[in-house]
Length: 307
Image 1 (tube, helix red, strand yellow):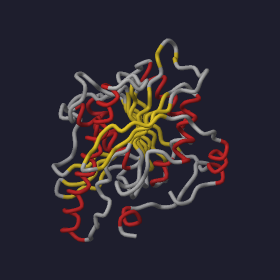
Image 2 (cartoon, rainbow, N blue to C red):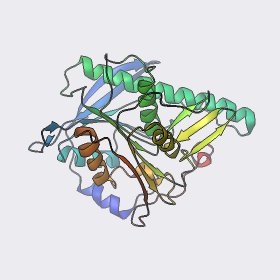
Image 3 (cartoon, helix red, strand yellow):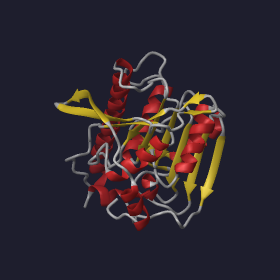
């Protein structure tokens, strides 16, 4: 996201500095992983119709090669959430594609698919480690009231984490743990063993995805049982299985939607209030055409990994 619109630039300038507390939650491969805790703003409303508002556990994007748990753009979103009475925890995770050369051709694709899967699974493990840390340490976060949210690679990790929880094969978590919800901004699940299937009903999930996304599959990119299965694929699967879910399809949009965390705040709040806190178990499938939403250009796999 190299280019930001004047609209968002104005938002960033208006955002006050947030108070945060930082904790080291794991050491992996000699790398120390940290999380930042942002508490609801003083005087904000921390309940909705008698329900405690959840804390948002956020996983940043960056193609598994870059990114950080806190930057000005993300902090603008954290501030809006804090002002609305929601806590935020933003975490590190290992970047499995960093330094990996994505080669063309069948051999390159096979090697890359293995590395992409490893990157996803390392991210899932790191999310679970962060949850365990929050469960074992008193940092002011109710681990039983967490909503997982991610953008791009972080959304892949988020959906994959809930996929493993629903299928009973997630890395070690507190007994009986599940997230209260998942918000996926251009997310998917990577698999090298055929199409992924949620064998049990997941927690409430809202998918936001561009119909022309060339970086993270909107439907699927797959060959020989290896590939990436996106939001539209899972919406169809959930429809067949009768699993409640929400999907907002952004007509003609590319990977821009990964950066819509601020732009879609009203839809996010609706999901948190109706589906997470009130447990409405809705199914919503909406095609959105909105020329006022920002664009950062056509991001593709080649632009991320071969430039």
